[in-house]
Image (tube, rainbow, N blue to C red; front, side):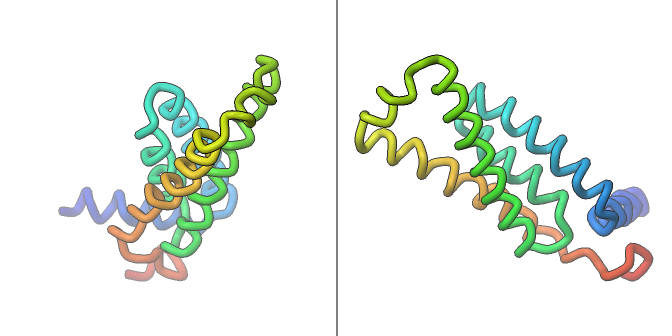
Length: 126
């Protein structure tokens, strides 16, 4: 029990320190992008990881949307570099689905932040 409390206190401290929070967010986004290249469930995992870096559920949800935007930008860049962006955009409903999945999965994964209480204003409070 003491180990769990110490881990939660360390997470709260990282969430309340801007430099650590952004470092965690970037690392989580990189891991999430890597997982998303293997399976679509990586979008949920990436959203969850990004969301856990933020101190409140509302901010985690916004971070999940940011992760979704990063996924869409990365995918667009990959298609552009491969020379198939125009063809992929012409696919109609499949293109809409390819855009909707990350936009839903990122914030949905980030909603796992709601399983923990919001971080206290200062890491020492509990």
